[in-house]
Length: 343
Image (cartoon, rainbow, N blue to C red):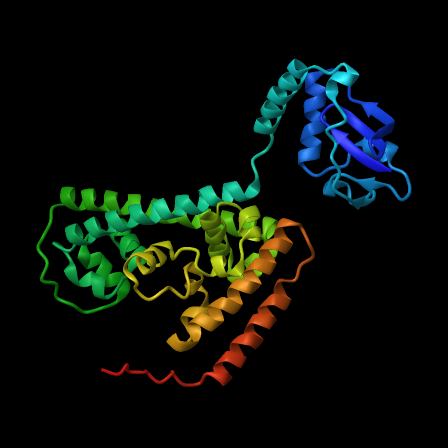
């Protein structure tokens, strides 16, 4: 006996003979709800009711109820049960509305957050360059004593170089020119705007850390929340990342280098964004490709476990990666000798 589910009902068949069946109510909204449950991988009450011992199933989704097999179900026709094509069309329209109104997948939120951080970084870089040029007219030496957010914060709070010199405790005679309070107030306003961007960036980073712990704990443990989120963004979703081969994962973010390799026969890239992982970027250049390959395989495992909501294995993956890294370091302690072609 084979359990078959169609858009209009559930059928228990013996070969091409229908033995039992339960039809869905002829209401497009109710049919849409049934189909939405099926798309989510759920088992319908009607399917459980018709399932028997030793039953086979025509959908791998129903593997819990029996052994999946391939079967041609075209002999089960909706018109034989008074279900029209117009009803199917209405049900599909309702299904589209229903799925559209469903809550947004968490990984899509992560993708938007990581892209927001990239936009903020770009804004900070542009405005910081302007701030350095502008405030450098008054106190060019500050760049030697403060960087990034600290540089901006000092200017936003103090403005005048004398007050900044007192706070950082240095003795220096600046070669910068004098400025009116009105001029310094304008510069401080720019610095305050940049500080707000830094605060927004920190807020989004904390948000990503919390969300990544929820939706991808294994990836987060293996990589860090930020790097794991960037991989998901590059792949397009956690689902797609979980389905990519490790060789593709290894090169995510290196698409431009790969294109140049294919077009101009330049050296192929050995890693993409996973270069940001300490195990890769801290390794000697001749070991990076092998370590990146090992890391990519662990990422693939972590992504699949996270997508299917499996058990936590992040710590084990970290240990395995570290063990493999040490093996590579021991096996390849020195760079390979360069080979020179004959003339």
